[in-house]
Length: 157
Ligand code: HEM
Image (cartoon, rainbow, N blue to C red; front, side):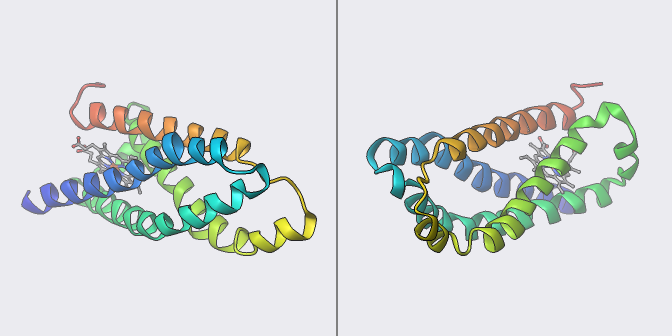
């Protein structure tokens, strides 16, 4: 029981750091850069700042995944993944997979040469699409947290 409670505390702590960062980037950083930086420089400035958070986010995502898996194991609730009323468990895992894919595969491999790509093609790299994508993942994250707390405390069945 003690281990389970500690795992739950670690789970929430890592989610606070991770989704808190997403909230800041979405609601503060992106709108500020869009307002004050030149269109061609927006994406580069954004990546320089976001890169510094990416390391922390990666660590938090790993911790959230490990503590979550430990809780599934300790509660022995693998069968929840076969029951529709536990959709909030699926939501957590799906969201986790999305972020893990973005932080460990898309960012390091696809955006590595971003500066060169911008220069080579001379294209305008403003943050309009980045803003839309971030609002979508931020809202999905909030919804997941909301239903997960309801689910974990027996409100949904
Ligand atoms: C591999 C990914 C994940 C796994 C395996 C996992 C697993 C779990 C488990 C087993 C619980 C406890 C459920 C219970 O007490 O009945 C839990 C609780 C919770 N999880 Fe996750 N989770 C994962 C990712 C996430 C993500 C991405 C979020 C949100 C962004 C999230 C948010 C929460 C919240 C808010 C709770 C409720 C804590 C409480 O009120 O007691 N989890 N998770």
